[in-house]
Length: 437
Image (tube, rainbow, N blue to C red; front, top):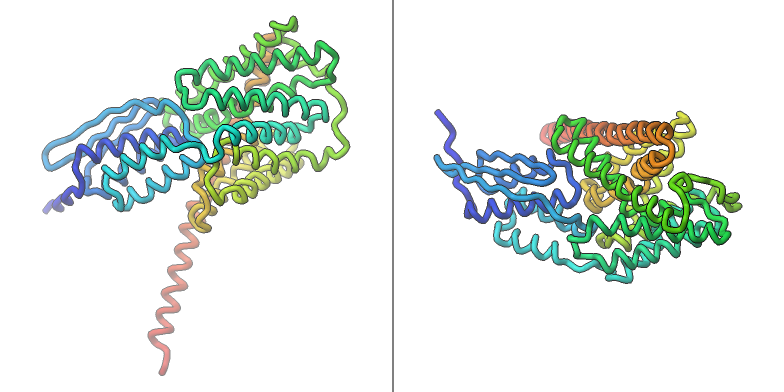
């Protein structure tokens, strides 16, 4: 005897529209396609659709539900732009409500529209000031000289203004990073040309850190590890193309002021690090976190959690590097600890969504920095560039593996902890019932 299907509790057309719009929003958050499929199936089940099929790619969604003997299908394109940290938090909060069936699809659609149109918390000033701060923070992490720190602050302000002027203009999403890289490279090598003691490696990367596709490349590796070849490959190729375009912009900027591509990785202009070299990277992590909080408009009450996770990431990375002597392996150990930590903060301490604390960690690890320098080296030294690309692949694989193992570790720990809580509860119930009066 077959079990009767649950009666749908929402209009099927509205539910399908809400599901594909919410799927687009989750993809814009940078979520894995497998997780998006799981959440959308749970939403369908929460509204009485027991038989649903969902296939998600970074650029397209396919959703079908059954209503009696009929099947309803909808197709949708992927997102056209990414979301800020405050928007990401709102999307995950809405997802929790939808998976419990506590919001009507029409209200969910309206709420999603409001999230996408939501203005930045700190306005254009926050975007510019935040970019200056995170640029300076990364310069400290790279152990730059005083001259390089001042130069990166100025360049960070320039790129911050460019990003503030370009916000909400998705049509310029591709050329802006290239033009920004060209502008930064031109200014850096113009300064070197006139005698400023600047190190190109420490001055070129920090102002462009918000354009580096570190999270995109890492999530692509994670999806490949999950067996999702289409989504993983497309994200990896997209990230690699972004690196190539940035490298082209750097080479073009150097050429405009009369320098050749090999000068992009030349260290002749470097100077000794500042005296507080041991403390500068740790201070840089905090400064970077504050800058990311402002520039990416993080949700309220998330700053301390972001700083905590960033410091843990950096500490684990430094300790594991001292232990193994391998930079690629340090990424594995950092994500092994931070991945369950992010879920723990979200689910056990009512903190921000794990994605809000994950993304700054990816940006700090900056797997895209190695890739960008490797692609840049290809312009002048193919052997060194290929070797650098291989090292970058190992770094990405290490971070992706750490993320996978960390998520599995968190799941196992919570299941075991929940099992022990259940046994303790049963023992307490037994003694309470059998206690003599």
